[in-house]
Length: 485
Image: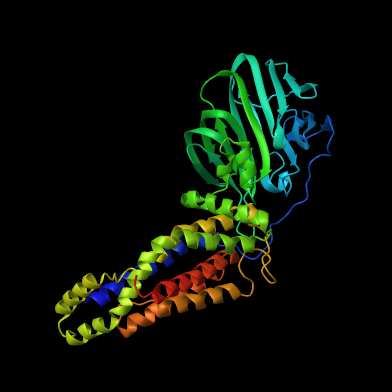
């Protein structure tokens, strides 16, 4: 196989791998053009206390109706936030002024979380009575609970008892997926962020920092001040339990319900900001988000922030790209001589390859140099996608006219079309060593394939690619216009 065929094959293979890797890695999460689904809050009024609640009566065939245990509800309010629990410590609701949607809309079921105790007789719930505004007591096992309101809508829970006990956290939820791709799941942080589907069937043991329910850019979770080893089990009925294997006389954790704004979660600490899932591109994604936030402070338009950040990224990476562009220019200069070699040795592929490689070596041209700009953009490209998909800051963020949400696709496909056109232009001005007509046609269709993939992805991502490619063309023309490189 001649050098030009090898080079063309390498370029096609690289492009194909990038495109298919993109489809495999991101296609299940493609957001649709639909709003985030709000749900009206069902929590109790702020300031209410000791509201009696009677559960439905149970019956048996032998004894008839069984008188239910009457549960009390307690609404604890402080620092502009509230939490509603019942006397068996089921969390019924949390309100936080920072949250956009209701607690029930996030967790999915009325009794989504509770703590149970084991004093040697198995795990069970205990009935607590309120002894003061933020203090509760169970007399049967001599358990005292003190609730400590904290800043940012966090409530700390401290249990202590003279009798040794084990504890278990029990989550309950249900499956739900919105049209914009957001899906409810269990999330927990040990040494890294982990996800469990609501209907997963999984068990194990890990050291936990926090665990909770994640849905629609909101998080409800408990967290420890220090990591704790726990056994966990998820079942197909939407349950997740986490329990300790050793006895203790104290238990301390905090509950948080918040919108997943990266800066707010970072301020809370305890690795809660890791719930904003940037995946393996986290390092790049965090800095991209910080850069967007920086520009947004001065110009409150996220689309303009994307454009300005793209320009900065292009300027920073230009010294690395300069070498690639210089190699392209050298390839352009030797193109006539390279054509002569191909014509002269068209019946001797080995001699053609040898002469071509010697020409590349003498001129300092690299036939694969054009791949470098693409490879340099890939980490930023994927990181941009994760920011647009995972960061709530860019949800419902308008740009201009028809683009009212940069986290959703362009409804009229204007940006994908513009992006495809500038990619065609870049391909046109970029020298290459491909002479085979079939291979040229395949390469010609690469921008179309890429544009087709991008049409349903976030318009903010299309904006980044369009601006980045356009600036790349200008940089390339600048280098080509220089007499020496």
